[in-house]
Length: 427
Picture 1 (cartoon, rainbow, N blue to C red):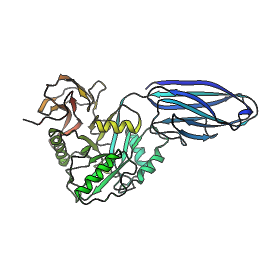
Picture 2: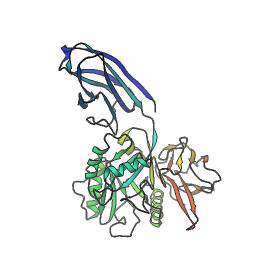
Picture 3: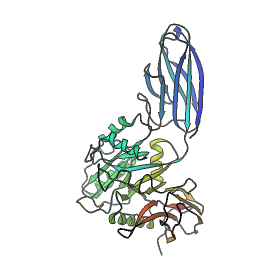
Picture 4: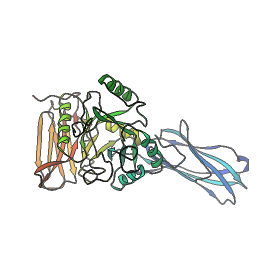
């Protein structure tokens, strides 16, 4: 990320401006990740200035004389200021002289950090003490930051209070972005609802028509919906039995990889073969300390082309997503073709962080294209897809010698062949 000097200026003010609201305009001309404002006074014996910030449509915050520096980004900000989109257009620093004995010079420095597309690491399925989790919201977020996560969804069961606490808790922490979420828990399956702080006024549902109606309402309000652990059946209500056709996502990797995850993966592949562009996600489903379930295992990587929650939700919706076993697991290098993208025919695959003996599989809708056990830590391939190939997926595996099984390290969503709008079924 590069820092951009937006404005550095000096304002002269005296007692004639007492109580006035002075505006110092500046212009945002490109997509920014954050804005910082710093105000200082030169050679003044006694001066008090109130400070605020205005964007092209509204006042974004006011701190009076309590602060001389403020920060704002798409997902976090100095207390007293609203995080959110940093619109292109005319902004203004607001200054109101409260106490001045003589003319003073006020130095104003405004900087922006230019946004650039990037991969973010997310755990999209976590629980706190707001439902049946053991960790307080702040403890969970601190743990997420410590292991290298950038994004967390607090998906407590049939409640939304965690979203409002998390907004206040993380408002001044630039290290984690929160997706408002809820695990919609029914007798015929669990669904994560992403993107709304308070998605359902009444989450109770008994019949299929009622379920589809609620899903349609959620989507009309901008929410994204995922079927969680759809093939688990260890308890009543866990296995997914509602229709799949209106959902955006399938959570194919839930916590430690197990037989039900393999079945969920196959269910997802069947959906792709049928022509549905459903996006595969992963989530730890962590509820607290456990010898088996760990925060960030698995990790969902999301490619964002816009800052903040808007960029995350767009990346998820597009399918610019892959899943790894942990935040420190193998990853796609920057030169790789991004999942969810459409390409003319050429695909570039570069996976870093592998180990000798890992296996990489590249698959199209017609079957396995490449399967290779590697003798290095980096896998690189560029290849042309056939005209009738609608998509390409990449997976990496490690061999577990104890149980003699291959366990996934990385699973990508499809890279789509340009011009194809639907998947092609196997012959």
